[in-house]
Length: 274
Image (cartoon, rainbow, N blue to C red; front, side, top):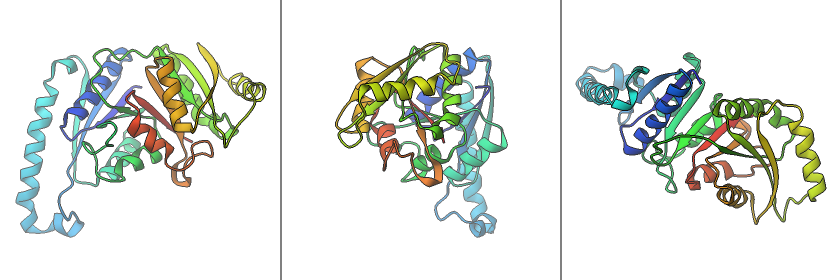
């Protein structure tokens, strides 16, 4: 977690994300990259290059610079290494491209909660970032003055394809010094006996060096409700899940469960790409 990227639209929820990122950077000797994307109406290469668009570009850019400078003076950023970037690019493309170019370890984004990411993005941009980012994405819904992760829930079917992202899950849990609560959600359409489910989890986790963990089997009507209800039942501080990129979600997370969970969970959510 040495390089943390925070996209901002200067909204309150974006600042919640920045405050959490600052706490993570301070604890792990990390640096922050603060990114503002300028998406102009009818943005295109021709518009950017045309003479009549230049005054508009400069107006928005100067306004963004002033807002970024004000953010940089925030007391919670004192003593941290913070760089600022303004880019004329679509939000999804800019965030993904910049994260790759700068070898970012973590993306932290603000979300409005149950109504989705409307403070940060419009439509499918947020879903694309969560689904396609090669690095973990942390979604923050509210102000968290003390971001201490003691109980970290990770729900999965613990199939072989989850092994690669799970290594990052373990790394995050160990760095947070958190107890990793591994849970398999049993639903009417996908049911395993306790003995079978426990054996699957035990064999899976035995392949990793997890400092602190426990395993759980939780029954519910569907996967999303199961994850939320289990996380609430143990008063978890963080929910982790895997996404499957362009191929859609893993067979454990069918349909739009990851986006629904990110939108509906009040607790912070950390996503990892398979």
